Image (cartoon, rainbow, N blue to C red; front, side, top):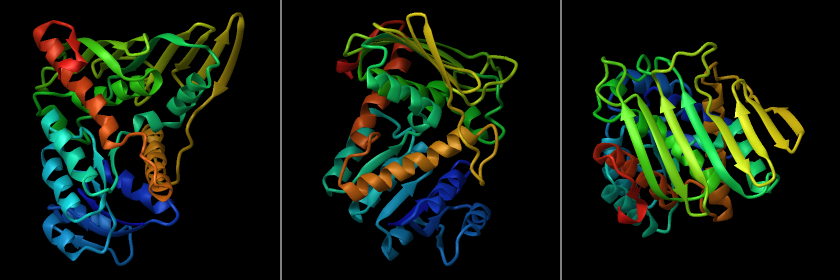
Length: 339
């Protein structure tokens, strides 16, 4: 697989390291409008072509997959450009500015017969994945309640200062991941009610959100996110999970400790992720998930299978984000079917 990547910023460096770790993948082209970022990224590879213009890169070709790691406003033109050049696409989240754009991008790539996957990596964190596999195994029976929580006071703005400037923040940037974990655990949601707050006066968007979801299978889940929570020790960037089923409960607690309780019997397991040789704490669980999701993409292409976080699947997660903002704005429960 020959890969081109567009956008060599803060998070894209993880994607580039991830590609280097995967057998059978070669990064052949990089594109970024910033010369310094382009220089840093290209130093990771031998004989990689560099571009400041995506159209020129596509015109030269020589790759079968493009990894789009830019900010959301550029996604639709870049995805449609990729579709026009008949290549597979991985696109960073949030997928689109709105549902109309998201649906148009899915349609454009599907028309080519190529694969579109959204880089929705939280459900691929090894600790979260361990819980998902336990739930899917049926060990606690049919779930009826879940809580997916991400609460932190970590300064995410130092590495990504643009996050402080948007009218939307925590649901669009982080909550989309936590909502997607809830979908991975319990299936699609039919309705959502949400509240939001802005605690940090230095940002424009919301930094606290609490969401109540009803899922198609009857599960109720609470999804809560905060970047205004002070806790010691700091748990960033861990997602904490609790799932109640007819036969028992599964928990993922701070420190990557997973427990399965069936009656009075409790089994505990350390599901801490490894620190890859290019990774660093505390980001190591996310960095590992980048490599895992990209390996999943490669495996799906080889097998002719649809990725778990395909563009079409991600429409459901993206719709939850839009519905959450609408719910918080209008102080009402939103039916997903109405979007």
